[in-house]
Structure formats: C-alpha cells, structure tokens
Length: 108
Image: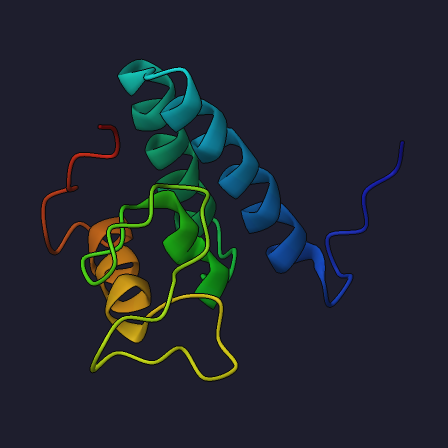
C-alpha cells in the first residue's frame, strides 16, 4: 500500500485513524493506548502534520461530555450548527496537543 503524504486529505485521514484508535481506547478502558495515541499525535505535529478540527475527537467534550471517538450533541447554549464537534472541544484538543494544558481524563 502506497501512502501519498502530499494528498490534500492526508492530515484528515491521519487524524481519522487516530480518532478510531481513541474510540477503541475508550471502549476498552485502555489508558496506556490513549497515552500512546497522544504521543503519536504530538510526534506527528512535530513533523509538520497539520492539526485538523477533527482532532478534538481524542478528548472528552467539556460541553456535552461526548467520549473520545464520539460526535458531540447539541446542548442548550452550545449548538453544533454544521460542525461535528463543539468549538470548545477543538480548542481544548489544540491546547492539549501543544502541551499548553494537561490532558483531561480520556476514559470513564
């Protein structure tokens, strides 16, 4: 299988795969797997992989409590509009991946 890293969708595809792994970590309550996913994500950022909005799928949503790998749901005062994630979740993911805030607990 040949992977074209110059494909315009390559960053989105990478983060989609990471989202699937994060959902598996949540499903199996595997904190070690989740922490490995974060390490891989940080390494990818260090190599220049673009952080895309869907990267918020890695974390619990601070607004609606959606688990990692789950889409957000509408809650009063925080409509989703056309987005799959609340903006607060995306912002939290960006800060967490840059190491600006500690990682919230990924599992319940």
